[in-house]
Amino acid sequence: MDKNAWEFLKSESEPHLTTGKPQGRGWEPLFNFLNQARGYVYLLDNSYSEIQFIPRSKISKQKTPDLQGNLNEDLVLLEVKTINRSKNEIKRMHLREAIEVQTELQGEFFTKLQETINTGKIQIDTFLKTVSKKCNIRIVFIVINFDDLLGEYKENYFKQIDNYLGENPAIGLEIVLFNQWTCFHKKVSLKNAIIVNEDF
Image (cartoon, rainbow, N blue to C red; front, side, top):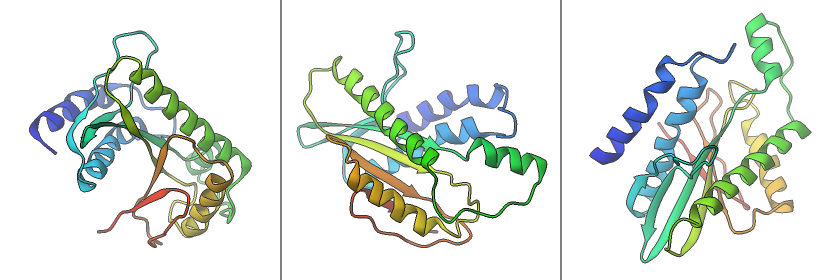
């Protein structure tokens, strides 16, 4: 990460260090924001040039994508999204209740996934109306914190997500999923999305 990108990330993360924490979710808003660094590294690792964070829009309620870069003469836009643990899981953890981990993702998850993709697309499309460059690569980069904290069934979850994306393609978008390190960690491969397997 270059100096300008690092300074932007530090300055924009400061408000998340002082704002109130959502009940039971701790520093989740801060970690959500810092996931943008993973998007930056993804662009860097894939040889995109002139990578930079996009400042927040000054127009009320108008959100921008997080990052932009270039590939040859084309503008590349990337929006980082985080899907966090469900309200039921946060409540369970707060009350320290035991529960059997689900081996299958539920319908609520896929509703959230689709909403996340749709929101990312809107942010990118809205920003494109303000620039003159052509954009052939539009990326929604998604980090998922499953309710299965240890990641025991994560491989199966990603297969279900892959099947969903095959049946519900995100037209005009590249979907990138981040497989972050967990206790039960396996590299996975997908047919209908790009997967980034974290490797320590």
